[in-house]
Image (tube, rainbow, N blue to C red):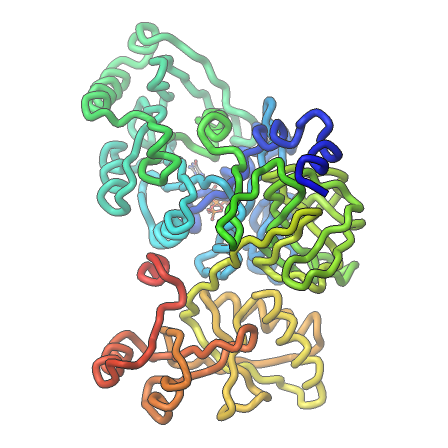
Length: 542
Ligand code: G4P
């Protein structure tokens, strides 16, 4: 069947391209406590996805912890797994993919960024760029994901707006281009001037911030009269910005060189609707995606999707595995039989679901940019491609350099079989990387993680899902490099280094206590192959 035939069949009105154009698929990247949960709630509130803010995410104590799937997450009041929110806003369909909000990294965080077309970089106005924001920004940069910046908490004392812009430019080389500008210093927030029109929006707090803030819009003269010196100060700063030409520039934004900046406060709901509008106006719609062969799969080609996350046992009542698939091209219709590119096997999609926190509903159709949850996805792994009719494989999701290593042992010898099954399962899902060596034997594999919280997830799941209580012994390594058989020989018996095999792909990882150890060994063995696990900036930022 040719591409054109399939197009006619799946979209009689040529609708796939139109549907793709309406989609905006994005994530919020931030440091813990910058206000990501609050902003997510506020965005969803404006898009009328929920009735009261607090019903989507909610930390411990807030209402309806719908994105926290595991009991452990509830205990800790954090969200480890990634939720996907889909909501309609005007003529747009927005897909907001949640990145885990805790201080630790897991590969999940990175994988989510493979599945989005844009990111909101959320900054706390008092803190500016913080370590986790920087790391995540680096991932966006390496994936060429355009970034919109939202400076949050403007209702509280914070830094000067120009100083924050300067920090963005100096530290990450991203040219900030303000969309709007705050009137009133941080802590005394009056409203926002829209740069393109000069119109001024004043905000009035609603009690508790759970409702949309009251907004009133004025022309420049009225605004000047209303806000006095605060307005004058903002106007002066704006004149400065105009003089240096810091205006929104689509080509450089899409190329990841500049970032439109918006100011506001998520909690009292100031400037959140403007942010939503900006996402619709500025964020790119789903585009053709490059395959491993370097060909482009246009959005209106037959269905293709990328598995970016696999999660088991999200619902204790159904011990199932859900694969989260980002639709890359074509129309998805529940019941279609897809092909799993890695194995060439058919994959039935009778149980496709839309994911909204913990609530799931059956999804009948989906278009490029949407995320579907496929149940009973035993064979699917993160990075896999599914397609209909015309074969395609997307490049694998890069595996990130682990920085934390620990030996895991089953506490109860009678449960070893369950333990092995659990370790294999968690390895396949990509919850951690599992390493082993002849020297260490099979009983106590080494786990490698990007962030230590991944270990807690492993222990919790081994015990609660597989009935194998286990313990960890942390290893004193912090760096991993790819090596070869010569590396195994050269590093045998060397203090502060060890070579292990990654089970999933058989690659050899050389582990080092720290960079001094690595440097010393490289000096002594200049011909040793020690490659970074991921080319680019992530390794350096880590
Ligand atoms: P996170 O998901 O990025 O970790 O942050 P979260 O939304 O949980 O926000 C962290 C804290 O910052 C919360 O306060 C939240 O209420 C507050 N916050 C978020 N946005 C704003 C804002 O625009 N203005 C002000 N003033 N505060 C904001 P908390 O006391 O830690 O939690 P809670 O008891 O309010 O839930």
